[in-house]
Length: 65
Image (cartoon, rainbow, N blue to C red; front, top):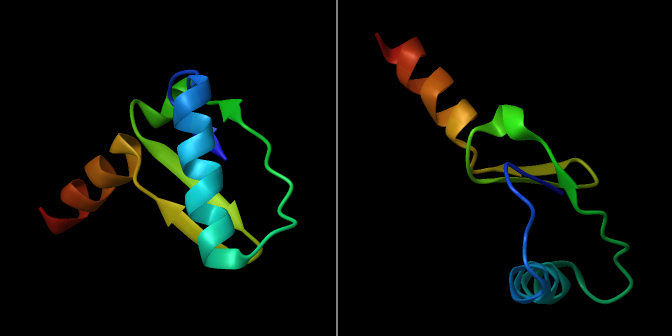
């Protein structure tokens, strides 16, 4: 999992709880900081990618123009 800024313990727990609910127990999470995201999160579980980063949203907006 990547975030633009370091996540606090409560935020990490919330993400872990949500992913465990979706994928079941036994996930091994790795939290990394990637300032290039500008803001938001990017989560990859296997081939599933959830990208709520500002960088991706800006790219999508640019493609519409």
